[in-house]
Amino acid sequence: MMTSLIQVALGGAIGASARYLTNMATFRFFGPGFPWGTVVVNVLGSFLMGVLVVVLAQLSGNRLAPLLMTGVLGGFTTFSAFSLDAVTLWERGEALHAFGYVAGTVSVSIAALVAGLFVARGAFA
Image (cartoon, rainbow, N blue to C red):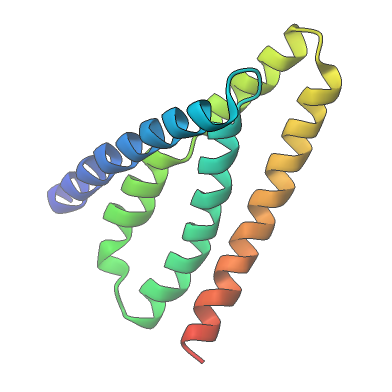
């Protein structure tokens, strides 16, 4: 139990730091006004989750799941920030942007997870 907790804590620090750096980079690249950083981390995190599910299962690496899946990817992805961003867009009177943000992020994140499964399964075929 303690080993898993340490893995989650370490992974969470790595993931949260990566999220921060990604948010800063997308802000500099795209500018303010739309939460592109949150979109990027949720789509990329979903893709990586799909890859890790396959890779860890194929390599009998489930002992690394607390570190990589719960810790790193849990710290990297931002569903709570996603929710806040959607409500903020709505409250600013940008209902169309809010709807597009929610629908687009969810559908593209699910597609990215499926793509991650496909890519990882192809690597082990």
